Image (spheres, helix red, strand yellow):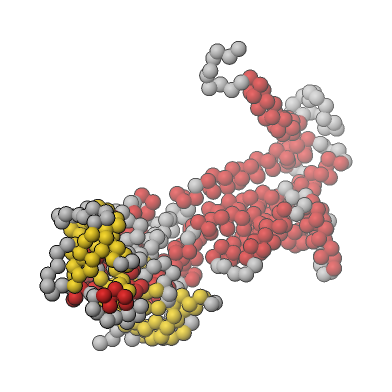
Length: 332
Length: 271
């Protein structure tokens, strides 16, 4: 089966800055794919390479089997939802949504109908006569989505689509985006710096840093089995145990990651590993208590369920966790 | 003693404000007044009598019409040149980043900061060195130098408000460069261009200094006025012309002000 998006050794250098550096990537058709990374990691440049706003300085890009380099944005069967939505302020909502059809020369009645259908799909029926300035952030986001989807793109690119929304709206849009993607069957590629968003929405995630893909896998893979310290750090705040601590546990490794929620305080069964330590700080986070424990110079964060008693600062405790939750890493 | 703390300004301030307004506007009102005087040789005060005859006299003077036509032609063509070049310049400076961008921006604005006499002398010597005879077209070129600045300044301010992502969004949705210009850029900068064009027209219409240096035998309207003042002959005709010119240039400037005040709401409402 042809890949929706294929990157072969793709680079985009701006002078000495390697925004994207020799990236290989294959996104399957119908996939919900996330590119996750801090700002400046190259994820947005990758998206712009797919959209055609940037041209690669090296390598080869294919979109559904067709060579993409050198093809301008207006001849690609991809559409983008921009971070600032980029709605045309001088056009009504309906004309915004119908814009893509208008420039393709589709008749007024037909494009009006299609635009109204698209607005209904994003749950904004009857908003066509308003102006972008009269809508809230969440509504503008839906319009941007409708404006892109009305063109029936093969790939939909979303640049930090939920970044400007408040928490409640963001969670709601996450669900809607996901169900929309499932029902339309269009390949979605979205860029985010929010690991929670990537984990909850994506079928697969590529974690970017310094213009390179650090790890590519399912959300579970990325979360539970980070391959590098960067991934362990960035995707949730995993503990990364040093080789010395690993040795104390009887596990020979250069480094190992350990999820804060995989650790229990105080009780250890026979088959579990345990580490003694001193509580140095604690804070209440609602569902959990975040407890910092000093284990022979190594700081380990424990996410302890709020129902469990919390030890006082200075208390000597035993940390217990399963060997299976300790994920060994290749690099230190 | 001030027991009354109402919103009213102190008397001294009121007098100063009224004085300032009178200082600014009495000379203009005098021009209006002497357009109606019955005395044609000198401006004696008060005018011995009032008449409307000078309007008819002005209407029948071919030299007034010749000067007016020339001024309108020059201003129109200079504005047209400025609209094209100024917009292109603004587009280049605001949409892309390149080495020396700020310098170019400064160089474009410079002609309006330079005293007109310098621009005039520079153009005059350039034209004579290039053996270009002074004519209608040299006046147009002279005027275009500062008209470009006005258009550029208006356009560049608006271009900055048209975010780059709007243009990318248009391309993304399938519009090529021309369609993007027509459907997205033009409606968003249209009012700025109209305002810039009107200001440019008004500037060109009453320009004296550059015209003196770049013109040949032709008299644009302001130059004609200057000549009229030197040799008095039916003096109030000049006042009539001045009054008409003021009304005609005032309206576009007022319109330009309203157009640029809130461009977001009115920019390109039609299609």
